[in-house]
Length: 183
Image (cartoon, rainbow, N blue to C red; front, side):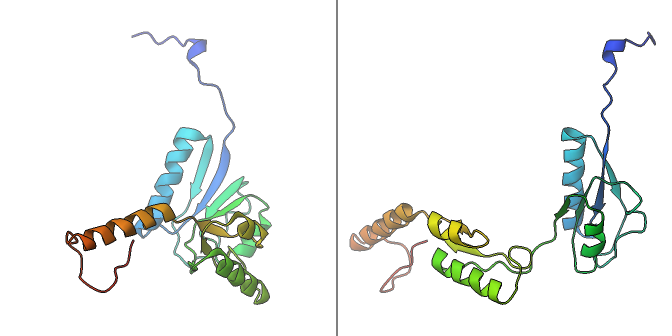
């Protein structure tokens, strides 16, 4: 066995960025988050991951301030946000938002955003709003810009015509009612 070290085979040193993971992991969602971050760290970064088992309502750990972290991935909550902001590092909040109203069109979405602003509801931090039609003018004029989906109207129209044709030719196998909803 040759124990000589070849200089060309040595790995180059990359300084590691410390990343704090403040995620409760007693449930599968938290464990999946940790697995995903770990996979990224091992394959695409030079991160050193710092994690401590926590409960979902835990305060930030005492060691965090002195740890020298360069970033934080956390479930940010009202009882952790101030301490995390004091770190003055990038923070990614992975908690699920409480509400995502899906409104009937982008004009209604803009109205919801305006109502949120009037009521001092932080969008998207406290509420996510999703419109329909992907109207670039309405979406960009909204503050914050409206997230919107674009329905495949041509496919809906095609399917509607297809269903009507099946009904007219007696080949329709769906429920026999006066009208049928196309999805």
